[in-house]
Image 1 (cartoon, rainbow, N blue to C red):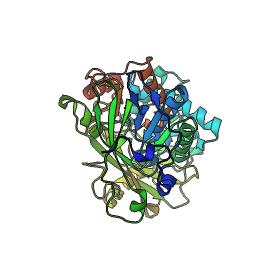
Image 2: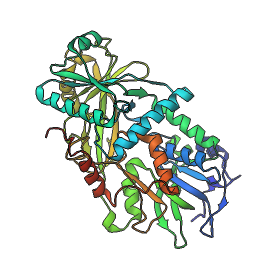
Image 3: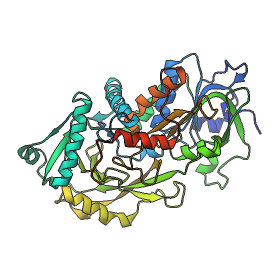
Image 4: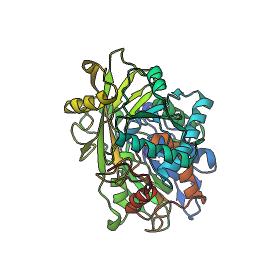
Length: 459
């Protein structure tokens, strides 16, 4: 067993591997726990949230060292690159929940960052569409919630029949439309590339092709992270041995578990048995659209269905103006199972039927399977709103004897929108301005339900 991964030792990079790992500015330091640690912070998971946390820690604490560990050969290659790329307004998550608070703060920070650094984005707005009185009643609840939060934070308004017909003549909205004025889209890949570059420019260290096998709490304080390194050259050449036999380890003061789909198994490997939970995964298939008509300019969402696990099969746009639909919801047992990321052709008819409720002139023959994404869930019925709603779980696990270990579980939508605010929240948790919410995952679920007491969608 190696004391520290060879890829992290200055001057020891194998030339071929150096081209793949993009490592930068390795720094060692003397810690406050009277021992020599390799890094102050280790962030596990290089998705949008992990990148945002790593960047924020490197910028706000330049006297520390921060390591980002990603198991794939590039950043953002799981949930963060397989979503709708929507900048969410913060409409669905109820009062006094982390999802609402962090989405609202993150949305403003994200728009500001995009404007400042030229990251492609657009304020497209979004229509939530009702076809009957019951669905209209749910839209009225959403609008009432937005008014409670404040128009300056979540601007919404009902559209007149004339405005609906003039702006989007192909849309069917029998009962009405609620417009979210602050919803938009972003090029998530460019956004994550910016976070990565800014992190490295401010002294961060990144290691790719590296899987975290387990974490141990050390008696003197801090954590030992055991890793195995993928061989990118062997994987690229079709070699059968995906991992090296040698297990490396590094020692760090703090660990931020932002591993996305792997976050719950990683948490279970460290926390005591009574804190173990079962991970749940919602697969979503996206559909492409090749016809030139109809081609709305606004994001279109059906009225939410409580307990669905998502917001229904909706119409979104990419930065080139291309229309796509999705995601639907299909529960799967494991994100690593064969076919987990293969679009499911059996889902097309159901998706088409939902799309046709609000866009009846859609050319069904022009819709095809595109790609899939998988969302980590805290429960099998963890819905977007209503009685099955579960909040983000973000907490330093001090109560169970793990100070400096921050868990981020169930980080799904609006995780991309919230990423910059989540980074500030985690930094505040480690350095004193945030205490963290809840005692366990069940408390995150309860907190979500409490936040929606007066906001439950019909069920």
